[in-house]
Length: 327
Image (cartoon, rainbow, N blue to C red; front, side, top):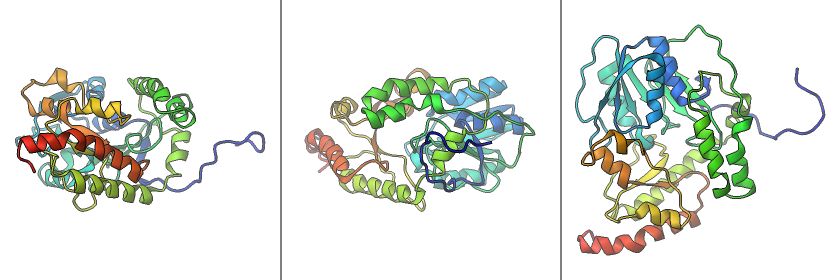
């Protein structure tokens, strides 16, 4: 029974979840664990170019895994024929590869698993197991969505999120740097968590978000960078159809670009540092992990922020472009 009166709670405007028909769980990796348990796969093919936490459910479920390589367009480099009780996992990289997801669905059908942790707005395909991570796109400490046609007959415990909120609160009250250690502690706290239902706190925050507005901002910010940086960006990922990107991937010949951005208080993640241990230095995956800068295009970024990022990139890159006859 809810209390009546007393002190006030956070005032969040209740609305709908974007993925209102999905199963709501605590983490994306636990969505994958749910799929492995429900479908009882014996082996899964996964890309080298992925986060190491993806291994956690396979280890917990004692499921064999085998790596595959990607090409320059972030698509599987070779065709893989699945044996009985095998699945193929593909990451919808940075929310830019929905067309590839659809091609793979035609090949692998219901044995395709789509990791949409970086593609929150991508629509799930009928009959294809698909999962999403909320904290990659919004200010929450946890929370994930799962689409599957095989439901486990289990009652899961409700997660609690209030102790994981320090980094989000400190960022507002102090600054981003003040909450960074708490952010890392939150990441660590999610390791080894059992499958749980999404917490009431995360549910409340995610049902209070203006998803349409955020979608439009992300597309506009991506277009801003693409219009101004494509002549110095060695990558070329055009938005197609309903793609809503997570970041703008930028690759140049400038050394120490990430450090230069950090020096200017422009923070982007490295996807993914575990690749330096998994892959050979001459591999494409290693090269991408080491050299791609992922520029923030999320809903917090004003035109002033975007211009600052652009100016930092142009400062040294134009000299490099002239040297290599790019302009």
